[in-house]
Image 1 (spheres, one colour):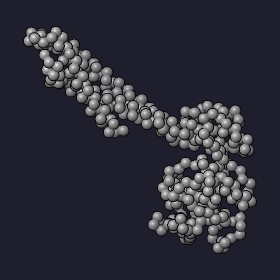
Image 2: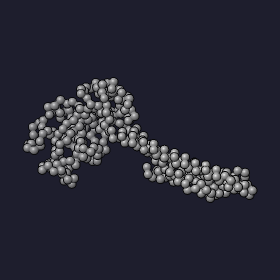
Image 3: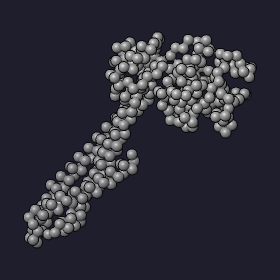
Image 4: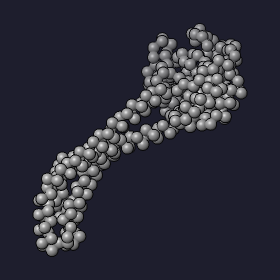
Length: 329
């Protein structure tokens, strides 16, 4: 008997294992593919840099240097908060501007660009929520198609009520600015400027520049425990800035675990059905084996045919399950 005869007989006899076995193999491979792919995606997310925040009562450059020296810390910035009235052309809104180091900021841009640490004089970046929150002189929200051109319009940061202010008010009341870009992140209106310029604005308002908190970027979420312990030794307590991601990761990890269990159950069910079919079909298979041997086939050829038939049948169903799983990832 030639090898292609064995393959032909194996393929022809693949249906002996039944539809139930095939469906269980498909379900097992589908679940395994989904669990594996989603777990890899989850681990990739967890491996990305993670952010912690530290509330500070007193701040010094020594504090910043000590945090920089902690292993797994890759960046640190003080945050200065400045509640102001942002004026762009004839449109205004009340907003909090956050002063951070230009090199620290990482945002996905909708338009324009991030300010860097090199040319940040009077440079301001706002998020999309802030750009859609401007109001006109009557207090109504400005429609998207009526918003001023932020690249061409005059931009001011000012304290107090904008109404009644002069064209060029006294120093310390209004500060010229320029918008360098609009980012996507943030559901509430936010604006960012470089920390050095933020300190100058606070001094111009007659305030002492004092950061409200520190933002610490660490290697990944897995390094949080060791970094938090090191911060505790410095007398600082760290909190997550993104608790939603932590909750989402936990939920997705549990779902991936359940999916993996479903995969194992399907494979065990398929194995149990195959075992039953082998057990109850043994006599018939032995007769077929004897008939093949009587026809000149090598001894044990039928066992190889059955084994290859199982491989072909299982491979077909599991291949379909894998393709469906990859399609749905």
